[in-house]
Image (cartoon, rainbow, N blue to C red; front, side):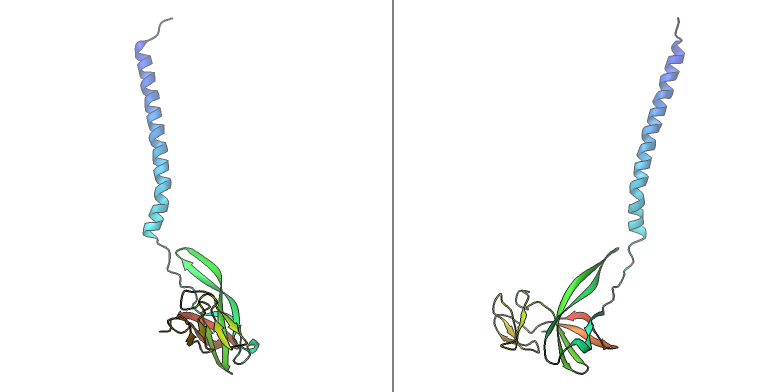
Length: 168
């Protein structure tokens, strides 16, 4: 049996072309798959979603005058495309029929959680013994300033909390 030397060369060159085409094709598919997310990120950035700054915290009718109450509520946080719902708390004090004050739950000294002490009628931070009056002012301890407050509005009997306002 005789083998044509020209046919063997032609067969190996077409096989080589096939393998090179296959390898380049796989490279093109991988490049395309990786470039689509990059293209979407660069030319179609996430829309700046503004989470609602005002959230319902509690009913006004549930609050007692001059009796601080820790209220738990849910607030949405937006980070790029990701929107997460997180639990938050605030100390709410009803001052009158349509007047409410809401304090951040962290001490202004080092951010510890404080609590209301009925016996002394003060907010007390157990970490470093800071004490705050019912209006948030510093009574004693290392706390450098009054308690931070949430913006508050009342809408249809609901107490709504807005952005946190740092008190100087």
